Image (cartoon, rainbow, N blue to C red; front, side):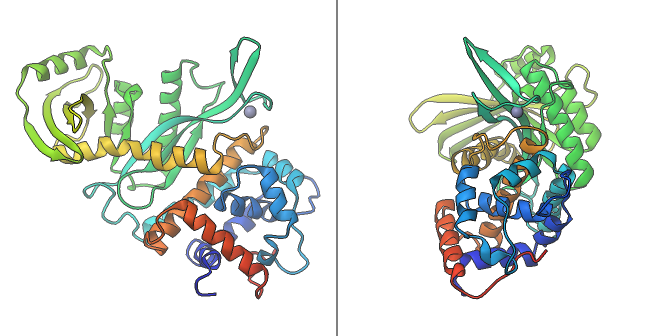
Length: 405
Ligand SMILES: [Zn+2]
């Protein structure tokens, strides 16, 4: 049993993160339910840990008694209809608290003791679409009509740690059609503001720097971060912010302040910088341009605006490049491996609930891989294979109860 990775994971979830307590506290709005909320949610969470791509796949696992050793003898697990009904009326706050508890525990256990990039704890925000479908929809869906086809989807902003250590989803916020502007950038910026405010409320002093893309290169975002006491790094493109234009032309006439040879896969990186003041922002800001010469001689550039006035240029370069972590480790991974784009269920609280469960599973997996297994299993595919093998072995071994309620 020593090498059974499923048992290892189960013990890790129970002993370090007390997940079963959070599940037992969950509630929902069903009347006289056969199964408690925790009983319904447990197999869904394990389904996402094992990377199921649809509820039908999960239903097959339940019907085949794959999870039977995780509950007391005689306890039946719910089928997919009960799962869908429960998700629609679940109390989202309970799921939010489970994720907050995981992040808090990780911080307490010093997962980010040395920061994620050169001593700073850096998070990135990114907007994305979830659960797109041409068939299923709900009243909260956003709609895109092309010809006769209407594509329904949900969208939101996600925040995760980037750089070294486990990539944890710290929080997410849904786009709200009633509240948020229909204009893409303005709407997403609004969601991003709500997201960072709520994260700072529940995780004081966790974040040092937040990195975001060009839609946040404006006084609204920078002042918002300043009010929360967090440093901002934002990508800037050729946008028409007047004060920024003059900073750019100043930099274009100046000499490079630094030239790095053979830096992180680039043949040469030339760095230019200047300080400037942005309209409607009180504090001075820093504008930095990294002119990149790639190994294949191609030239590109990355331009940023930041409130970090004294931060080393190399650290800023690492931060802006780590922004892609959220794209690679979180979104691409969840989209290809966990069906983040698949439409599991629509209606009521279900979309938000499924997202929470996908993110909770992803966080547990990250912590398990990085903290408990110390990265000695290289790929997620491999760990999922080992977990499924462990689950199979468990089926024919002694009982190991995860939740007895
Ligand atoms: Zn919907």
